[in-house]
Picture 1 (tube, rainbow, N blue to C red):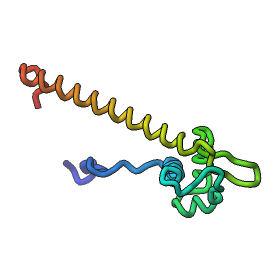
Picture 2 (picture 1 turned 90 degrees about the horizontal axis):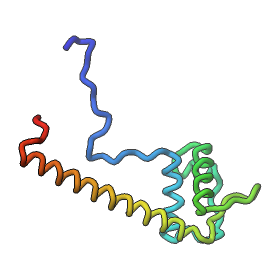
Picture 3 (picture 1 turned 120 degrees about the vertical axis):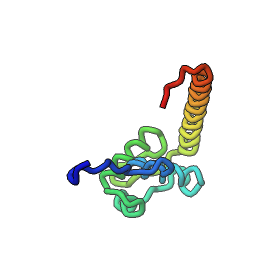
Picture 4 (picture 1 turned 90 degrees about the vertical axis):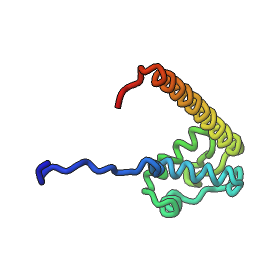
Length: 130
């Protein structure tokens, strides 16, 4: 290998969590506050600017995240008054968590099935040689 060439370096180890996109961090923060009961129905959220500073993201990112939360029914907004926690926010958050757990169960089943198939292929000598 010449001095101009270098081996590509991994940017992240396999055991490190994948960083969340900034808007998702905002969504997760609000949903976690609701799930823990720290934000109650009809309670006003901090301003966009305050959330941006607290979570460490840009104000435009907070605005996008609030739009996603409105779409999911977690918050509602009044022009000029701010954003508030919806009456059904806790249920919406619980439903989203339950849906994520179902998807995770499905992924685990698929992974177990693929692992079992690979084991059978390898035991028959049909596996990919390394």
